[in-house]
Image 1 (cartoon, rainbow, N blue to C red):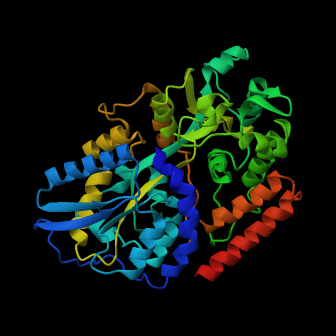
Image 2: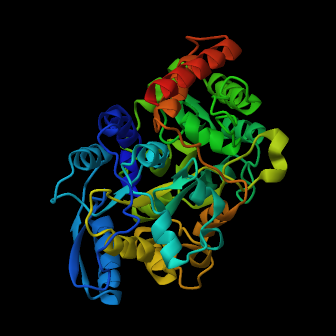
Length: 447
């Protein structure tokens, strides 16, 4: 799913700009919205996709909606990142969107608390939807904040482990037995690594945080920390899982060649979103990535057999193997919209109608976001894709907690992780305590 190439950039842009509209966006859902969803009307939907195949997929889904709701015409505007979205929601006006979408699930806390996205509770109640029976728990968690639901999940991203089965065979490893724990991941990565002078001919696994998708946030999906306590204080400094993840990741960096050597090799990699991705070219034999990589690697006709598995879990959590990091696209209603009932009809259709969810998942090769769609016989996906369906349905799969200042706390944690990884900071316990204090300070300022 190439749209996720913008997720990290969008997160940073949204974090930087999101404070600008916090005071300006005070709207909420019109609990007594007067527009008639059965009347003939036109609504505007803004989304972030821009790849031709993705744009076609979203347009096909909109066409399904308009066929089911012939009275509602939808004007679609694509390639809208969070920065553009924030600007429009801040300034308002009649030319703005009615329905909005975002790839940045970690900003939902800010969207909900600031009123940037309208409160969906009245619409859900009027539609008599029991979301607990429709949508997996983790997805419901990342589309609300402190009891306020301002978004609905539109498809899911699930992260797993891709591996080169041919490389496994050449290294004498069983290609049907990918690593299940992080100690096994390191052992396997060493067995797959072939050095070449002061570099590599093949690297078993690129552990560095600057590597493609190997961020602290994604690694932590294997540990599942809470991030905040019941009082809203950061637990980054006290949660043993966070310290353990950073210790495990640092050990992988050190034992696979060291930070400098790995970074030098990483700088030889091609673009993440074309045929020169290091997994496609065989430069790395295992890769943490989202479900979209399977389709991309297949499209680029990689010259080896691809294996797909859940990411390994901590050795102490071996019984939880199969869980993973989840995120996805979210949809909401612009608070300034005068057509919120009609806007809700579009959101309800795209996020809860089984045929719509399945059709879009098939077209865009993402994980469906409802229980019924996940088990639909109409899913037309690569058989290996079932790994990601299972990860999405696993009860212990997880995503970072929401925060009033959106993704800022994850960026603060990632900044520290980078310093620890390369050895600039050596006292992990003290560094995490300082990071937690900084997160608490930043959240207090945002309130």
